[in-house]
Image (cartoon, rainbow, N blue to C red; front, side, top):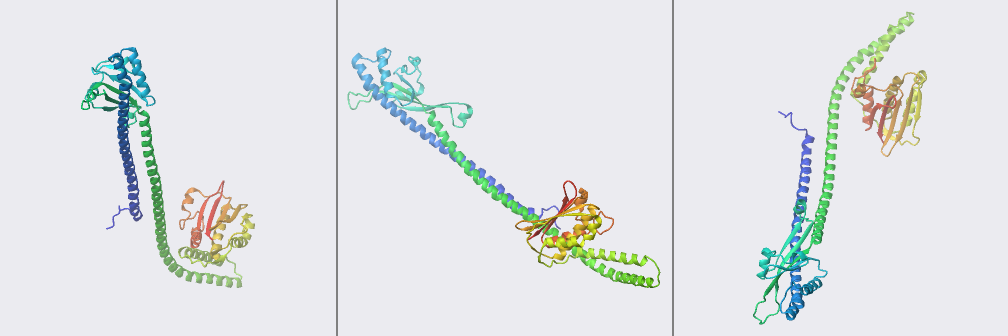
Amino acid sequence: MKNLFSSPPFLQKERPFVLVKAFTIASLIVMLAATVFIAALNAHWVRNLLLEKSKEYNSLLVENLNHQIFLRFAAPVAFKYGEIKLREPEQSRLLDAVITSTLHSFHVEMVNIYGTDNIIGYSFDKEQVGREDAGGVMYEQAMQKEATSKLIQKGSFLELLFWFPEETKIVTFAPLVQEMQLSRHEEKEVIGVIEIVRDISHDYHQLFKLQGMIVASCAGVMGLLFIVLRFVVKQGETIIEERAEERLRLEEKLRKAAHLSAIGEMTAGVSHEIRNPLGIIKSSAQLMKKKMDKLEVHSTIPDIIIEESQRLNNIITDFLDFARPRQADLRPCDINDIINKNLSFLETQIQDQEIIIHKAFHDHLPGISADPDMLYQAFLNILLNCFQSVGKNGAITIVTDYDARRVFISFADNGPGIDEDTLEKIWTPFFTTKDTGTGLGLGIVKNIIEAHNGTIRISNGKPTGAVVDIALPI
């Protein structure tokens, strides 16, 4: 048994595209996350490289400073005064001059020189001079002839979390050694410790900008790729939807064709059975009328029989035209000429109802391949409906135009228009708001237009009236 709750075929065919869209989005997210992760790893590697280079840079500064201090300060002071006493103003000024000239333009923020007793004997910050036990573990390592460095970073929690501190400094402790030796095998004596503090915030900010540019460029590429893929997926969805709608329209046409075929077969059989006795009734009434005229007997009964027989025959003809629409005999024809023939045929009715016809025909309307007799019948039905809508002293506007692919015909009247409920049912077979008629007139018109691969639409005009818009392919 068929599952009544299963999805329609076109929805089942859409599922692979939905999966493609989900896979596309997931892939882009994974690729973007991987890009950010790789960028973070690269930034971390560059950050470590920057730290190592900063350490080497500080070590070179300390080595150079150590050489300059010993050569230009320690040796001359020892020779002149016999011992080094940094608390002496003259010695302090000389050391300050040596250090300042040595570190000029190297962006060194702080220099502290510790004695062997872990007391600061010299500092850029004069308040630090004389401070005891300020070196900590790094001082102890320097006394063991081991230079060490560390980073000091300051900033908010988010800045530190995303490795973008407001301030980054590198602190290096290195031994201050006596360069002159009494013998070749004698080790250099540690006579103090040098602490250098250098601000490398600018380097870190440049690194963060580089990292941001990498992430932004990768995100841009991923975003562009996402837009392209999303566009492709969207186009695919549109194609799927169009095909699904086309499939539904075809299925509807097939159901309608099958329904009309059944109606056509039934109508053909019934019409055949009705028309034969109907013809006998009509001919008998006509014969009766002739005999009554000869006998000069006055009666309206034969006329009524003939008139009603003709009306019944017209109804049967409508049934046949709707249920079994004939094939269009396509040949070159001019829309303006067909409409003018309709108006010529209806000239008497137009004069009787005093209807004003406004024609706005395009002078260079291209010819089309169509069945002029069928279009004549369709336009005639539309005009008759317009006449019934406007009544006496009404006005009807007929416009023809075209574009590169289609010819447009518009019939607009100034009648009361069509209410919304009627507008929804207007194409329903056998639906009519008139006291007479079969309700098949507009259905026949639609069949004729669709037989020419055209479209027809009925709507309310502004401010009043109804408008019939027809488009036929060139």
